[in-house]
Length: 313
Ligand code: AVJ
Image (spheres, helix red, strand yellow):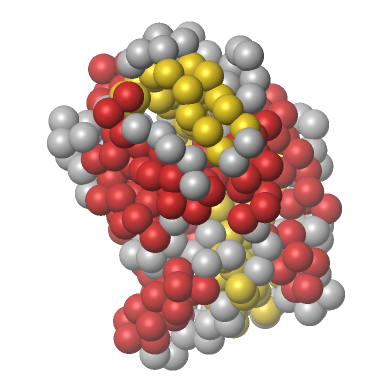
């Protein structure tokens, strides 16, 4: 794990142009805490918008899933989250007497413990089986269990993937599902720069802190000597394509060492940290066209900021 982190940093920062670091490294303990703070920011509308869908449109989600009361279902959530959105759907399914189990999958055992405790308190009758695992390994294990699958991949988590990576991801998801299985895919929708950019550049500076925390993490875990004051958070939104990108910008000419490696930064040079892809129907169609997954329904919040697409294998 640490070795992989180190190799990714060396590869990404040794480049002469297009320096980059993978966004998955944001999420150490401090990064997890900062992300929770982000979801509560006034500018970060994504979490609230999807919450509204799960609170107010549960009946529509269930209708769109077209469930069969005689079948057994596994509701598999990729990335456990905190359960505050999913609980609404789970409650409605329990109340509707559907035969199902909830299977959250996450690589963080803390996240799984948290969601299990929360759901045991909220819905004591719910059968929950957490998997501390890689998504696709878990799906492989569930493949032959005789249940119909409903996969939840919420929160615009797919937004961190490029379109090619997202296609590959949905394609692999399809191959671990049976015909008729469903996917609920939560995505942030394309919209004006004036709304999207502040979500990644909030007034209080929490998102800046979230990005710059990666410098601290490298210093702590890999022994680099990044100076926090030498860099700033610099996000952009390309309204034409619909992609938000976060960079950190070097404020001066400087260099940083990692063991025998030295990384040099020009004044104003950027390090690319994250893509947050924004979707519309065309992007969804384009991605699905190269998979065996089809689009069944789309459910949005009242502002049309966010969508949960109900897809089918
Ligand atoms: C967790 C990928 C949905 O891109 O909006 C929030 C992560 N980064 N603020 C997003 C994030 C900066 C978030 N996702």
